[in-house]
Image (cartoon, rainbow, N blue to C red):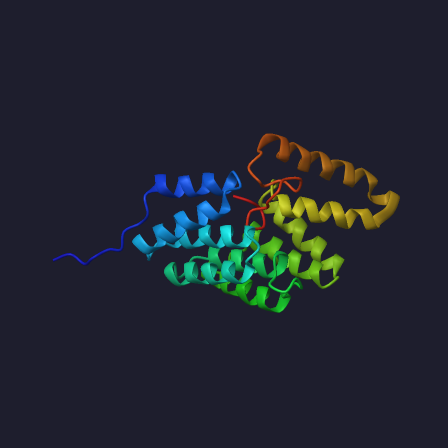
Length: 206
């Protein structure tokens, strides 16, 4: 007899929950995801999306619970840990970024990735440095994120802010960064741009 393999939620049901969230129907998206989670309690994708919706609803504590639940369901997958780090830095419970806790999540993600740094990992390190007022380290990490993923929106946004402190010397770079970020926003209105109502609960956007 073959072992019983936990079933995954239907892609159509997940897509429907994403569409509800994208259209601002967060309570409806939450209800749909809780129902999906009851039916498919081993699906990390459901937990990640539920964590995003909880964070967008302003409940970062619940968002972290869901992200950590996703990590339990997908051991060895760095994504839930990086998303938890994002919440701790950008939507932290209590309002103050928790860089120490976020760096623990980032270290776990790096270990799960076999020590291979991703753009999200580097942006996470940059955001942690930024939250502690270390612009030089933040700039180095964010530039590193762009080396791996030129369309990493969070890195572009933060580098734009950092370059503002360079005065006239940073004017040309600010213009370039602004154009790149504006082009990304024009190309995709899916909540990933800094002018949109919600950022994704990940550093570079997926």
